[in-house]
Length: 124
Image 1: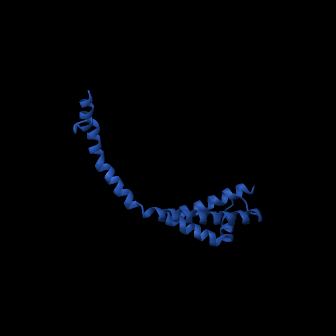
Image 2: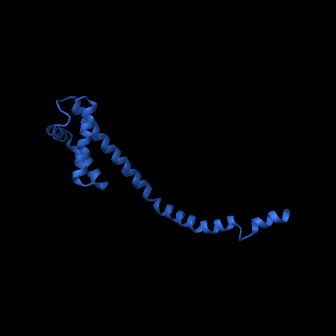
Image 3: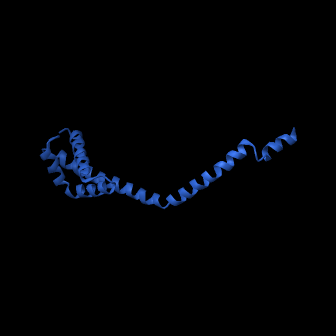
């Protein structure tokens, strides 16, 4: 019995040995892929941080302007007046949005949806 246990571990035809041999190239390829992607991760993280910072700045501007003036939710003039009030933040928001791969029309729509959400929050 003792020899049989040893033989099953050393048997190159055992199921676990076959699995390990088949899995080894996959693990090696995965390791190479992870190492190749490692330098990309910090840059992606920095882009995420910039996106969050720019969106927060745009939201804060919208909030401060919307709560102190007579803007109406759903009114096109109010949307564009708020964009004008927060012009610098809106330009930064649009730059980040376009860098993320959205087209100009989609970015404008997203920026206006933020305006509608802010106006909802302030009760306009």
